[in-house]
Length: 141
Image (tube, rainbow, N blue to C red; front, side, top):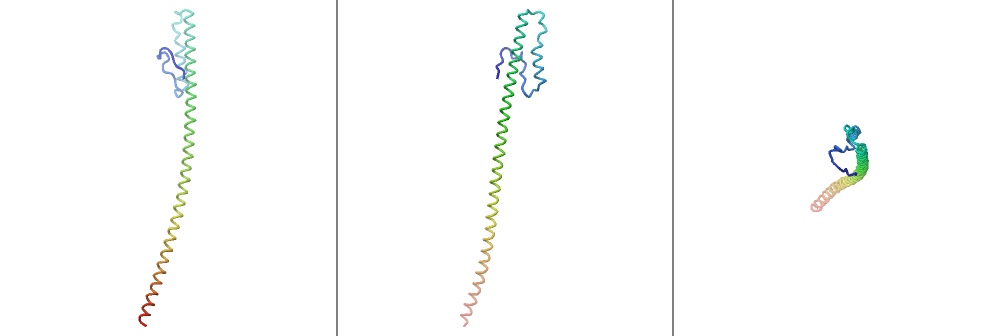
């Protein structure tokens, strides 16, 4: 970024990229229009003022270029962060969906195991009933 030399008020506030072209042009006009009392100045003084105004215009242009570059860098960095976040979110969603599928499969297996356990308990109850009947019949005989 260009360093501004001299009286900061003479530059007003340096226009920023988001200030818009009209404000930048107005600042440039103000810098160049301070020539109202040039009739009282010598040609050398007028030449020096013109050279100073050109230097100020160049400094402002350098500042604006540097600002535009910085904005571009920041926007590129922001887009990279956004893309990384999108990829991370997609990966997390995929992992979540895979986990949900695993949980669902495990729940189905657990339900099937419970059903088999109930059937086994029912069969066991039936077998126990048959055994009790046979024991009673054997005792009665």
